[in-house]
Amino acid sequence: MKLRIRLTLIYGTMFFVAGLVLLGVTYLLLDHQLGLQPKGEKRRLIVTTKDGGVLTGQAADVWFEREQAAVRETATTTLLTQGAIALVVVGGAAVGFGYLVAGRVLAPLHQVTDTARRIAAAPDADRGLHERIALSGPDDEVKELADAFDIMVSRLDRSFDGQRRFVANASHELRTPLTLNRALVELAMHRKSAPPEVIQLGENLLEINARHERLITGLLLLARSDSEIAQSVPVDLEDVVAHVLAQTETEAKQARVRVESDTRPATVNGDATLLERLVHNLVENGIRHNHQDGWVRVRCGPDGRLEVSNSGPVVPAYEIPSLFEPFRRLGADRVVTGQSAGLGLSIAQTIARAHGGTINARPRAGGGLVVVVALHQT
Image 1: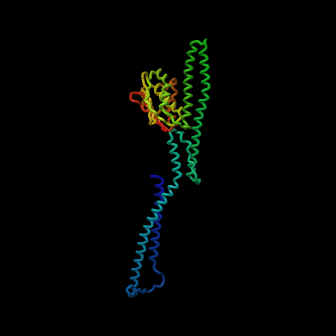
Image 2: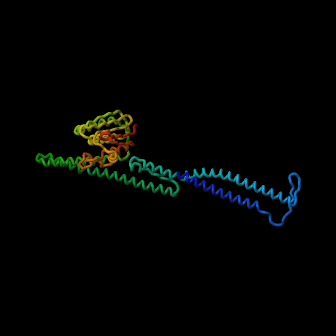
Image 3: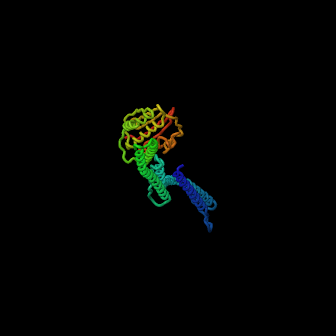
């Protein structure tokens, strides 16, 4: 039962109890007052009836007592009947007024609840932390609660924002020495006097350096895509898919994986560069986590849905949620020398959420994955 209903029932019950007590006390006082006998000297009664008769002595006393009992009964009956009716009417009005008052009193709590619900419903943990209650009004307990909630959310927002800035700044700082390392290794390898051992060592170092560069690039992209899209423009997913397939054609041939597409014009709102990275990551993921003579299929249509499916090893359903976490790979690809940094699906998820869309994956019968992205259309 909601708090507003409980408060209304409490108000109504207290009012009815107080009304019943007041009615009972009034009844007792009236009954006591009507039962009082006049003090002092006993007086002789002379009663004239309606028909002109005159009663004296005992007959007058009997008539007087009978009339007094009738008056008392009428008064008490009228008091109880009309008092009960008045109590019900006024009590009903009091319950309705109490319901309105409870709603006004609890309105700030509804504002706190709505803000907390919007923050909790944000796609990412930190996406709705810019929300504030900013409750106005007297400095009571509810305002203290709202202010404490705003302070907590503000600190969390600063913490997440600082974390993103740290990842972006650290990634930028790390790219410079990696670029310098690559230049030095290539310079040593390309010398005419370089022995085969140095060339082989240089190739190994370049491979490691390239993997670190991919990791840094992924971290930068993850930090960027984890924020709101500053400017959205109409983007045709069909063009993006065609561009990505041309980029990954060489890698697909080397991996002996067949890439197929079934696309139709699909215009969505978003950042073209980030959407290209989303499609690229999904296609690249399908190529790399496949087997020879496998396939990757890409579909998109006017409904703004993008589907990328691929053959490959069997993926347990319970493993799928963890694949969207950063640096998580499946099976043997979890080793350090894996082809990727384990950020592909994580980046795709953050890009989809930054565009207000959703991304879901499910195991494909026979092995592989089916990833479906739903984006907002223009």
